[in-house]
Image (cartoon, rainbow, N blue to C red; front, side, top):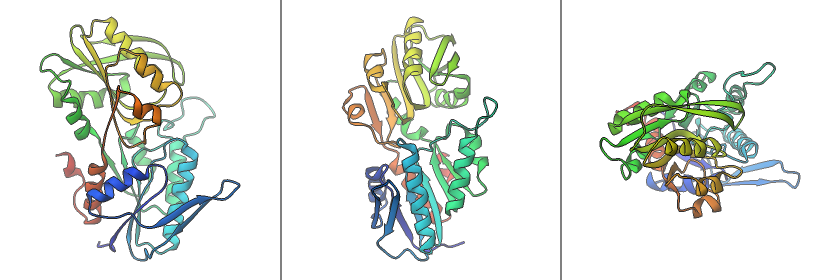
Length: 315
């Protein structure tokens, strides 16, 4: 099916990212105003004709999560009422992804709720990067294109990689598949940290499965939030004889004391992407290095618009 001409809109959550992406595609962002009334209500006005257009709305639902999610929903509603031909929500960071199942009685599955909200607001398609849980794709009744930041991250990690002396470390059992894929690409060893949690963001203990002694350890995860687990894992690796410790995470949430914890840790460098804009403190930290996935997303948007294969990006 052929859709109308391409148009890219962006909310306020990470507009510089959207501008970089659009520039790389030879496009300009659509003219739009997103503001708030005095009581905090979101108001959106699109300043150009998008009737019959194939509209891509770029908005990560990063902190403040609820503000940015509501902004995305209102932009989509505005585009739908302006008779856009198709609306694709481009969500580089998908908030609420950690609430993908019931872990206790009488608790919500909030990522499913967010999926329902996005569809109700008018999304015809979702484009996102490194979901915390891949099964979230099944919460949608519309197509979901799930990209991986792996090509960008692998290129960045080449700086620290030493053949035969590198070990990729998964900070938990859930990340083993991701870590194994990176280890295979780097032709390195694999280790896993068995961590016991007492509650959200609280780790009781860690056991390292695998040999890290005398090697460069690369901690790999999809996101870093408070950095408590990450820095504890780094200390555990150093305690087991790792010669150097680096970390790589796609989504730099970096809430609370995360930046100071990383600065004071044994981690030599934390490699992140720009799916979430860095705070001033994070951007100023010599240990935190951001690499852009704007080109990857821009290529995916062009392929979706032209009805080309997106999966071939990873071949």
